[in-house]
Length: 603
Figure 1: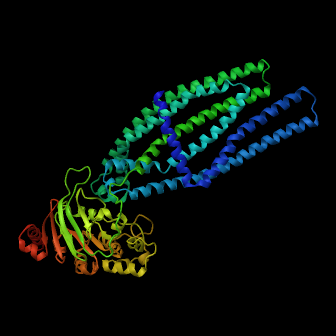
Figure 2 (figure 1 turned 90 degrees about the vertical axis):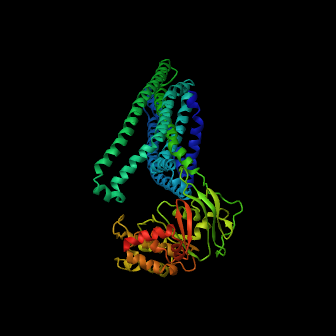
């Protein structure tokens, strides 16, 4: 019992959070729902009272000769009952319409809340399995949980009002009826709360397995893995993995349901005993002449309805308590705080950059990893300088880009622009000064024009600027050949889309990066998917593309970086060499060895 009582606090918090979310989604709809439900909650009392009047009138009429006044009185009562029924039907229709509209509004609001937080959180969280579990639970519940919360709140309010109305009537009949009904309803109420609590714990514990099942299902049903699934005949193996995971989840859920059925049955038996005990007392009081037939009928109906309202109230409360799974997870998700330090006195980001970029003994280790990604990075880049970072995969080249974009902060050391630590600038201004293409660029399933226009924040982008960026990236001719030119939908996710080659997609991403008016341009393996001719053409225009910007080129193909003003060689998380191509070749070091090793394959 103490354990159950200790859950009252979380339950009250759940109700408060649910009311807040519903109100935020649409205050006007929430107000309308409350008004309708209050009226619906009071109508049963009116109906019962009219029923009592009708029975008493008919009973009196049987004792004496009928006259016009008696008939008129009875017809008036019947008309009132018909009016109550009509109002109840109308309110049910209105309530259903409001609920549908409000459910959609609440769901859309919750999607907006989750999406806003998903964009806000640090990149680090997306590389954390525990965060992925939390996000999975929040996203999984979002489509239906707000509606369930809304339904439970409205039903709870309506049942509470109706129950209060019945309580007033039953108290007038006999004060002892109410305590008996409440006491016999308590076991059912706590059984429901216990079920909700156990379900909450089970779903939290099984989130990783459930997410694994969804991941395997994604491999089987989405385009990303379709080629490998067919080439390596992975269908049956993946289906078996999915079936095994779902079998474990299903068996555990069935075991829980069996326990809940037994405890719920016992609780309902107690409630039924209480109802029939009260009814027996009322019958005895009627026989003793303390109640009229009309009083008995209305009391019996009131007891049955009060019992139903108590059961419904328990269901609503349990549903809200069960929603802790969503609301607690949502609170946990929304409570995630950025680990990027915010300056108490932010500096204005320089426009233009006059002194350059400096990495001062920068080291970085990804959270939850033992390996140090980069160690003691010390270098500087002058404004407008075009530099390249080369080295083997995993050497730490992309990590330094993440630090420069403030997707992470250094574990030690600092990154400065014009002598000021990046952490002293607003994050949005730092990222607004950077543009680029990542190695794992996104293929947005949008029109060609919108794909490129995503590079700028403005909602309306000059068409000429879009075409110019496409020309510079070498994708203009390919887009012009599409049926609707720049209005053509790219990708095959939606009907009417046109798929591009991976190299063409990369050029679209490059055009998106070029279009952005940024001071720093980062190209992370910008030609990894391009053919040799397109690659050569791009690098012939590299200085033109990066004109007026500080440019950082990352590549492990050394033939593509010869034209850079300076080249940094990265090995096992450290900068081991730097200089121009000719200077590095003359040093006879790692760069020379890597260059000659790659070059021999072309001889």
